Length: 102
Image (cartoon, rainbow, N blue to C red; front, side, top):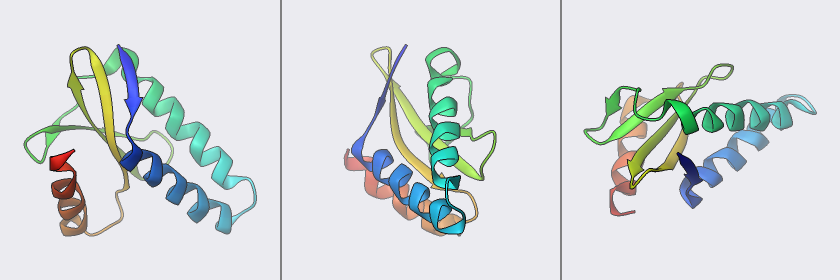
């Protein structure tokens, strides 16, 4: 399957990059490399992950406390969000509800 990262998820990745880059120089790049590896794995693993918010599959990152939320449409994996799991679950729910119109 092909993987498409939507603009909402792209912004999440940028925000995560800057968060980690402020912690330590080079950590932001490591974050992106790790998350892109996780996202790339969806080419073969899409659909095996548990469904959250009644419609999004959630894949947990291997190295960072982040979750990748995606849907499969016509053999294309659409990545909607890449969110920090340390956030309040109600914040995550609100963020995902806003994406419903996408």
